[in-house]
Amino acid sequence: MQYAGFIFDLDGTLLDTLDDLAYTGNMVLSEFGFPTHETEAYRYLVGNGLRVLFEKATPDNTSDKDIIRCCLMFGQVYEKTWNRVTKPYQGINKMLCQLKEKNIKLAVLSNKPDRFTQTYISHFWSDDIFNFGFGQRENIPKKPDPAGIFEIAELMKLTREQLVYVGDSSVDMQTGKNSGVFTVGVSWGFRSVEELQQNGADIIIEDPMELLQYAGSY
Image (cartoon, rainbow, N blue to C red; front, side, top):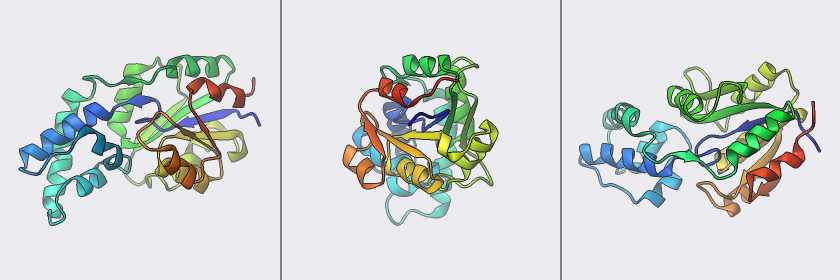
């Protein structure tokens, strides 16, 4: 099968953001007197949006008010810490460029707050790489709800049968399955291959360049 549009998750799929997320998350937790976590723990804390991150990262009896305060402070701190060591995974930029050479339409769909998603896209890639890019926005359900995929499909003027969704977590695999698109799991991301398999990945790739075999020429 060959496809005309590829939609990518961001954290753990295109970009290795784990260290900067953990660094910022622990700064916030320390500020409020909460226990911090090892960097590896953040593999399972992130992926469902900022509020869920702090619901998981803080003690069970943490008040809703304190969770909101953590989220607000994270946004303020992350403005200064988001690109300490964050970078694209090896092979990502080459893969994206070769997809564009085939006139494939490209997009990003993330549960990261939209303002940070836009910052990442504009910082790491030229304006002509992605046709569309969205993070978590008000009034748009976050992944694994398929609303974001449907929106991008309409903007791309492609059917679901022409689309691929690429991600690294159970949320991403569920998003792809819920939207009825071909769903690719990546082995280099935050979560395990077993998690991807258990949540419906159609295929799992070990190298970004493997995606090229699923791209048509247009």
